[in-house]
Length: 266
Picture 1 (cartoon, rainbow, N blue to C red):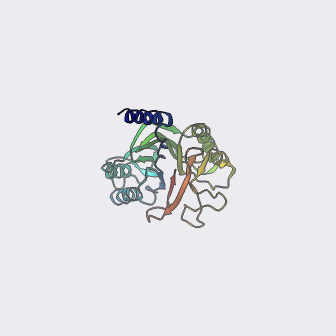
Picture 2: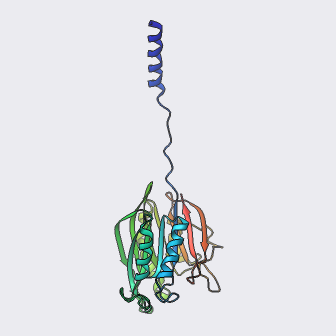
């Protein structure tokens, strides 16, 4: 009996000294992000049912954690949001301007036209920043839409925009960079959208310094704008030190002059 008690005590002491095996924390799940300029006003003339059904299906089929949409009529946004709600997606919209054809198909919701964030989870702290437009050469207003996103297994900050063309573009990009780059230094942050600029341009140097783009080849990038000459003007950036690209892709939906541009980050 004494021998058994002594052995039991020895096992207890050894267990305390050695401790339980250390289990490494599980890596957070990968984040799959999609950005897509629907061309919902000019290309789709505000059509709702087929457009929203197509885009909602693709977002769900891809398994997107975060979807960023541009050139979107509010009525199209409502159609997409309604179709994805049953699958655990929530959505936010920011009106930037008016789309001349946005009420051609659906007369109930007017001509509101802008951008959207759609996430497979929840969003809090929605922010809409109107971008500077010092030179009135481009009458269409532009905004940035952002929110804190809570996904299964992780949280991050997400922002999307559609910047203008012409002389206001560098000013708008600089305003976005001054806001997002400091935030990206301290947290997982995804930023994407139609920036209307090629990767080689110096206006993007600050973004490439603070983020890693899903398509890491800045010199020979994957094109996203379809009309010839095809070129890259759509982006998905993940904050360095927090989000590392592990996959990139594109798809021609047949609904826009842009490809649907996709990336995954770990």
